[in-house]
Length: 71
Image 1: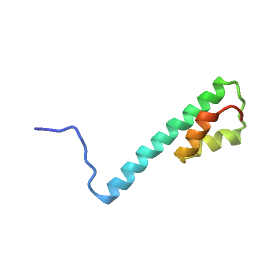
Image 2: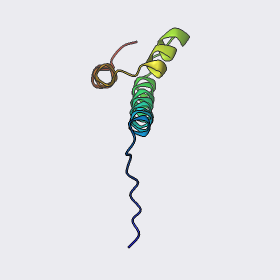
Image 3: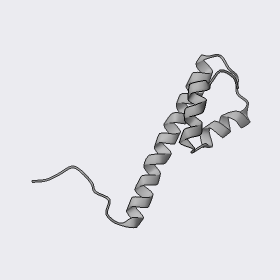
């Protein structure tokens, strides 16, 4: 019986696979923060936009997403 699940066994694969997944989630959260700020009509400087886009701290991104009322 064939399975479509891919199991990550080696320490190298676990480290790099997990990092890719975490980076992808952070990127999605950053995009959500930018969408919320734009929908609220807030203008961001290039520096603020770059900070949001490069942040990988999920807790910080969640805080920004939940409290995005000002730039």
